[in-house]
Amino acid sequence: MLSKIVSIFLIQDHGLIASRFLFFCTIIISLIFLGSVNGIPFLIVAIGVFVNAALAATLHPRSPGGEWLVHLTLAVLLVLTAWILFQTIHLPLALPVNDAWRDLPAIMGLSANTISVAPADTVVSLLRVTMPMAAFLTAFLISSSDEHAMQIIRRLGVIGGMVGIFGLGQFLFFPHMLLLGEKQHYFDSLTAVFTNRNTAATFLGLATLILVTQAWERLRGDTHPVVTRPARMRPNSPRSGLAIGTILYLLALACTFSALMLTRSRAGVASTFVALLYLLPFLAGNWRPRGPDRLLPRDFGACGRYLLMGLAALVTLLGILAFAGQPLLRTLTRGFEDGRFCVLPGVLDALSAHWVTGTGFGTFTSVFPGYRDPACGIAGVWDRTHNSYLEGFLGLGFVFPLVLFAGLATLLRVLQIGMAERRSLRHYPALGIASLILVALHSALDFSLQIPGFALYFSALMGAIAAISLGRHGKSQGFKDSPAEIQSW
Image: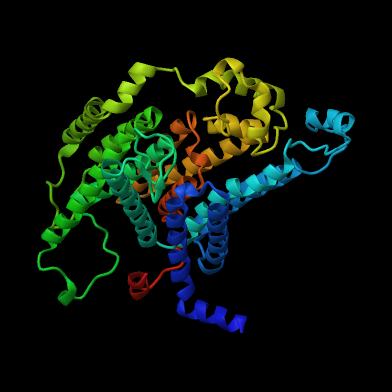
């Protein structure tokens, strides 16, 4: 019976549609439950991600040009999994176990002899580091054509725009509410569907980058239609239809950008503007409208493109002064008087003592109290470092910089291929570079990547962009859906 059901899915391609539908349902669920930071929502999302990854691996064959990325991602995933599990197994005391276990038998008569100071927490945290990588592979695999990859990015932009519109409306009319509950923190800041304004700023900044790219694409008249509709179904005026869609994108962009400013996150807003300083001049310099229904002039010439690039950079810099008033005010009034900077020496002390093997992934809450400076105050519990790099290094030890370098080098190589080999779609690799700039900068001052909902959203975006970047790299384009199947999805 099971084999019959599987054969029906394979023959009628229902499984392909179901896997894509499940993928976006998982992303939406991860966001509406406050980023899925709590146990039960996180487990539901994790199950959805890994089930969907299995479906994608079964039903979505990739072209030869993308196999190396899949294999390399799986290799990094296996290395991380093996090392994290190794941190939790019992070892002889002669091996580099954590010093806490050496004294425990004499004090309490117990013995664990593991690298991790909290093996159970390390095992649980394994899902948090492997889930985004599984989501990246899923997005890459279900992007079996350029059209599918662009659809994923557009839907991610729509999701980001809806979160921005919802967050803006709730902050203006119900400022003390967080979704359906009472807000407990950050009463003066917009947090959208997250509990932390910095995570909200990173998410809204990423959504802004996507919407900027999509609006630019529509303004130049390049909508990349997926399906050619019959004449009776087409709008009477293609130009009016394009204009309406462009206006909707611009409205979503305006709301999302306004929501970003209202987060009052200094690092989030600054990282977004740095990313825009790369993306906007690139888009301006690659302005080549196409199609008879374009809204703006065709080509501006070489001198005009350089002028547009400089103008775009100037507009971005002026935008910092014009729109980032609240974050700038917080920077001027508070400067670096922030708890995260006060506890930083303690985090560095902990890292210097455990940089080789780490203390076990996900054990920061257990380790940090021993290094916390009383001068920073004793109120509150520090469960994250506000620096994803330091926390990863502290938890994983020397393995973390190796894995980080391998991951970044791989992504940059993929984006470099996209920039070199794609022509009409090279703005998507540029979007990927801008997204990496935003997330990499903000991760040095906050922990947005450690929030499952945001990590899933970012991984899905990078997976789709990677598929576009490698779309012409191989001899084959991989699996191709029929127009009817694409339209039904």
